Image 1 (tube, rainbow, N blue to C red):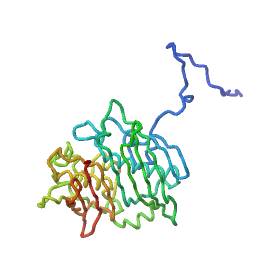
Image 2: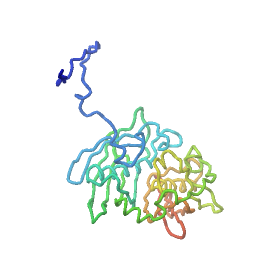
Image 3: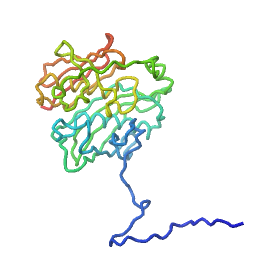
Amino acid sequence: MTMLTIQTHPPVLPQPETGHTWTRCNEVPGLTTTVPREYVHRSSLAEVFLTGCERTGEDTFLLTGQWPRAHTFFTSADGTSHDPVQAGETVRQTGLYLCHAVYGVPLGHNVLLWSLDFTSRPERLRIGRGPSDLAIHASCTGFGWKGNRFSGHLEVTIHRSGEPVARGTATFSCVAPSTYRRLRGDHGQNGLTRPLPRRTPLPPATTGRILPLDVVLAPTDHPRRWQLNPDLDHPILFEHANDHHPGMVLIEAARQAATALHPPGTYTPASIATRFHHYAELDTPCWIDATPTTTPGRIDITGHQQDRTIFHSTVTTHP
């Protein structure tokens, strides 16, 4: 019987004739890649903005990230700057990543987002000659289990080229799939919910957008009220299947509503503070109301559905 001999040392490979030292791929330290997309609840790798994480204390972390130069959604209407709402999405991804990768929340658990606030420095969001590499400082408070529910509060500061460009906070809970199914009832069952048909959206320029696809509001008879009506096939806002309107869709609705109160091109939100109270269902009209405040540039946005408050946002422009 012939025995097959397995080589236990790497074969000697020819060196390329370039004059440079050749390094095998498994010998290169610290190659840059995104974190696993599952950790930030994304389906597409292109929508993952985190690239690494290092623990700096018991509940503090230094993460790395990158914003692409030309994102199909998180870019200003004139194409020159990163969208301030991208900072909010980065805060959201940071919290999800730490829950799963560091604190051990199972990937199958569902996240209940209670609040998401972010403030950006628009003058530091200009797109440069390369992607924007980020240093993300995160501090976790109260991260832990209470029974079968994990919850916590997150504070994040995002730096670019050594300068802070945004900061944000988030409060959330994580629950097991069985608990989520009880919370959602029939709305969580596939096939039992019939989403509302897409209506003609507002003109994109009035909302700070370029494409009708990106507009999430439809007009009503009231000048300060709109119907939440996003395209459920939107590749970013509905990047994966949902049984309700995601929190980032509601934040986008708040931004667009505040922008729609001003002449096109004159209002750029720099900060948005949001509290979430109930799920925004897909099969029932959700009304978005805007109320200017006594503070210049600050707008209160409220979402209502079936006589209950779904969320409340305060949108503020940079002075």
